[in-house]
Image 1 (tube, rainbow, N blue to C red):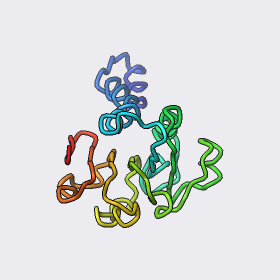
Image 2: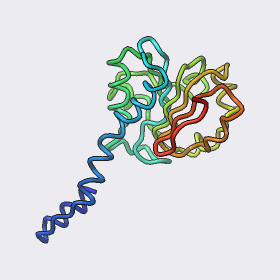
Image 3: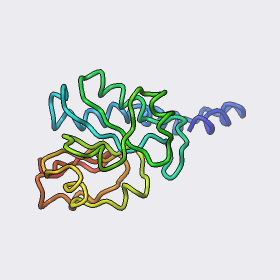
Image 4: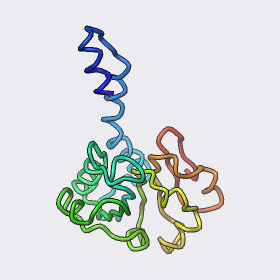
Length: 171
């Protein structure tokens, strides 16, 4: 959106739609945390697995990633954060957020909540049974920021699902 705004400014056009889009996008990290705290009112000492650090699926491009802000907000709230991303180097994640990234099975093991930030194919290929197997129970919360799952996938489980722009299931 900023590219379009700057182009509009170059031609003396006040383009509001991209400005509003950018403001909405800037609020998404807080919105995802709010979706989680709506379910788990207190996230102090809760383990949260963050899936994805890169901005774009299938890449290691971390420019403008919302994950950094999400991780910082979770940590400030007292959550124990694990993170995984198959494309971004461990060294980069350690340097930028101070967390040692884990492989997917280890990141999900015994977690209380999962926040999906990047739509990597590895996450898109998961289903509710996979999550239950990795977590080791079916009592956890999923906050889906990338339309990774169909909310109906969780109807016959104890998993609480919240999706950005989708509402929830198992409330």
